[in-house]
Structures are given as structure tokens and as C-alpha cells.
Amino acid sequence: MSLDTALTTLERAQVVRLIGPAVEADLGTAYRFKHSLTQDAAYRSLSRRQRQQVHRQVARCYEELFAGRLDDHAAVLAHHYGEAGDHDKFLAFSQRAGDAALRVYATSEAVAHYERAIEAALAVSPPSGEQLIYLCKQRGRALELASRHDDALAGYAEMERQARSLGLRDMELAAVIAQALLRCTATNLFDPAAGRQLVERATALAEELSDRASTARILWVRCNLNRLSGNQTQALKDAEASLAIARELGLREQAASTLNDMGYTLQTVGDQARVLEVNAEASAYWRETGNQPMLADSLAATVWSHYALGNLQQALAASDESHEISVRIGNVWGQSFSRMVAGIVCIDLGDLDRAWAVMQEALEKAAEAGFAIPQSTVPPQQALLLTFLGDFAGARAVLQPIFTDAINILPQNAGFAYAAWMEILLAEGSIDEATSRFAALDPASIDTRNVGFMMLGVGVLVRYYLAIGDARQAQKTAAGYIDALHEAGLRVSLADVYLQQAFALLALDRKAEARRSLDAAREIAAVELGNRRILWQILAAQAENATDLDEGGCGAWPPRSCCGVLADHAPTQALASQLSGAAGGPPRRPGWRLR
Image 1 (cartoon, helix red, strand yellow):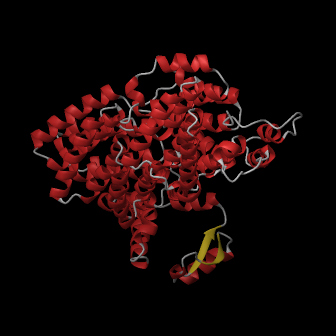
Image 2: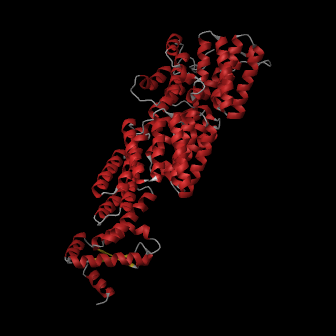
Image 3: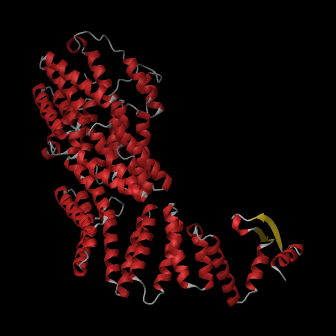
């Protein structure tokens, strides 16, 4: 009996039904069992050998029909070859299915395929260490992309145990390095002591195996450990050593990874222009290879440097592209990282409601991903915004956890948090508390080597001296920081410091110099940076000191024109009402209108 006749007979008997053309045009006409129980009974009526034969025939049919699109059907092929008892084909297509799923960031599916492939690879005698390393690392990568860091760490630990039982030293080394990386980077698993121990074990294994490629990777891991532990000098040395080996051996992916994280260290030591240079090289590789998670990471890493150099629009563009990629691939960690410093950029651009939204998203996604760093970098930005709008109680509330040790803060971020707290105290007039905190401050945290404070704290330091009536020290501090900022190329802070210098000079009755300093602040804020936050303060200063600061007489600058704009962009309805006066009483004066 021909196939067509058999199908027609089954259709008349209402065992199967015609459903029209198959989804894939090459498969011809499609039929389906009318009931799943009938299908199950028919399948169970076959002997084991017959079932295997059918599955093998189906698999071969798929391979022939879709020879040019096997990745699209790898999961189906793995299933049929597995049922057919073809171990080699099952392993090959399970791995292929995992790779195909990971390429489209279907992480759960990828993990399931890799786990089946690992089980199959372990059943081979003797197992291939190279293949097991690949499969275990790919599974770990999928778990990490899904922010399942604890599961990834457990998988790498199991990988190490399997390697030891099989006597596969290279696999053991790969497993130890993978665990070290999770312990030495900014995840919920960051643990300097455990990370250092793992790095030392990996180093000894790499030396034993004379594995210089792994040595380059270990140095990269150690760079991150030292960077996050506050030892930037050693971190930079580790990065340079890793990069030298990677370039010598032609390891382009390792070189790009090292460059990516070298950028973070360069940010901390102040070389923002080189940050953009090394990130451009890394990003070019990620774009070329289609590595979307690392491209998103690399782009997000440039936001801070673009901001420091005064490239506000470029900083926001990098954040937006990184965020779009991270959302598209479902990388929650990346979504948080892309927005981690975007809030302060939006504040300076005057887009205050968006600033609050991106800061909230950074914190929410960080909590979801187990990403600790935004918990100490975002609240200072929120506090600055709330202080700017006059909500001092709200500013204190978001920043307080950092100063009560409820949140662990990285050493390089401490200056930023301190500056934000001082802004609150000065804005609300708590001069005695500001003086007490200033007296307890570590001088090293406010010198010209602290990039975080240089970018975000120098203005508040001058404001402090003005608040306590020491205009001479305010002017001296402002002048010193202006020189240091020019030398370092940190343009973003210049307008604020020039503005504060104008106030200091005015207090010293040096009106002509004060006007020149204000003109410099206005030129940088309005023309060079497009910084509306500082420009608003400059306009307020001109209005409140029209006689002294504006020879042409700028006239009164109506408070409503400022408060109205701020109310339109306030992050909450309550603040909008207070700023506009809609809540009753006069409009709230913004927190920065201090003079």
C-alpha cells in the first residue's frame, strides 16, 4: 500500500486529519492524529527497535531537507537522534541547539540543551576535555546572562569536581578561573578573600601546565579583583600584563575583555580620554563578532568617561544603546549597568523626570540581577536631584543607608556619596553638621587624585567655605581645582567651580573678576556642555546679584520661570505641586538657590 493510500484510509477512519500544507514548505502536506491518546497508542505499539528506526528516519529526513538551516532544527534533530540511540549525533545536535539558543539569548533553553550535551559528553569513554570545557563554560555563560550567578557558580564547582575525577587538569583550570571570575567581579558573589584564593590556585595550575593563554585570563580576573578592592595601581599592572600576553598570542577576545575592564581602572585613576580609546578597540571587536552582551557592557562603561569629559549627549547615547541591547537580549544586569550613571547625565541636561526614571530602573534591575554597585552609586545621584529640587528630607532618606553601613560602598565611590551628603547639609542650612562631617573627612578623599570627588565634589567644597564665611579659602580652593580640572580634562565640573569662584570673588569685593568667572561658567555650561542645571543656577545668580554681576543689568529673573520649568519635569507629582505652588503657599525655592 502506498503512503498516500494509507493516509487516505486513516483519514476516512478518523484516525488522522488533514491540516493542509506543513509549516515548512519542503515537507508537503501535513496530517495530525485526531487525538493524542491515539498517537500515544500507535507509538507504543511499535517495538523499541522500530521506534528507533522511525526516529532515525525522521532525523535523516530533517538533515536532508534543511541541510542549509540545521541550526534552526538542531533541537528537533537532537531529540530524534537521542530517541534513535545515536549518541554521537545527539551530542553534536544538543551542543548545536544550545549554541543556537544562546545566540538569540534564549538562556533557559540554552542551559537545558547544554546540560543534556554535558551528560552525553561525560558518557563518552574517554570524554573529551576540550568539549566538556566548552559545554560547561557555555552553560555558565547562559546562566550568567540570565543573572543566575549562584547557579553558574555551582555549575563551575561541579565542573571542577568532574575534571578532578577524570584527571583533566586543563578542565580543572578552566573551572577554577570561571569561579574566580564570578568572585572577583561586580556581582552578588563578589568576595575578595575567596576570589584571591581562587586566583592563587588558578595561577599555580596555569604555571604547572605552562598555559600562557590561561595566565592572560587569570591576570584579567586579578585586575578586576584589585580594581574593586581599591588597589588601582596593581589593577592597571595586571591589565597591562594580561593585554601583553593576549596580543602576543593573538587572543583577540581576551585582549578585548582585558581592554574592557582596563577602562574601569583608567576611569578611577583619571585618564578618561584613554578610557574611550581602549573601549573603542574593545567595542569594535564585540561588534565584529556579534557579542551583544559585551558590546552593551563596553558601551555602558563609556558613559562615565563621556560625562567626565563633558560629552553629555554622547554619554546619554552610549547609555541608550547599551540599554536597548540589554533589553533586547534579556540581560537584566546589563539593563542596570547601562543606567547606573545615566541619572546624573539627565540631571545636567535638565531632563529631571527622566533622570529619576533611569535611576529607579538602575536600582530595580540591580536588585533583580544581584548587582551590588548601583546600590552605592545611584542613591547619591537621587540625593543630588532631590536636593536640587528642595526635597531635603527625601534626599537624606535615599542617602542614609550608605552612611549607616547598610550598603557596602566601593572606595572609589565614597567621594561621590560624601559630596552628595554635603550638598544636602549646605542646602538645608545645617552648617554645624557640615563642619563636623568635614572635620572627620579623610584629606586624601578630596585631593586632586580622587576622580570621583573631582568630578562631583569640588563645587560643594567651595560652597562649604562660602557657607562658613571663609571667602578667601573658597577662592583659593576654586582656583586650585580649576587648574587641576583643566589639566585632567574633566570638563563637566568646570562650570560649577567657575560659578562658585564668582561667588567667592564677589564676597571678596573683586567684582570684575567675579563677572569674568561667571562669564566662563556660562560659556562652558551653555555653549560647550549644554548643562542646563548649571545654566539655571547661573541665571539665578545673575538675577539675585544683577548690580554686581551684570554690567548691562539683566533685570529680575522671575522665580516662576525657574520653578515652572522644574515643576514640569519634577519626578513626582508632590514635588511638581510644591515647586509650582499648587499645593498651597508660594512656590518652593529650589535647593540650590542659596544666596
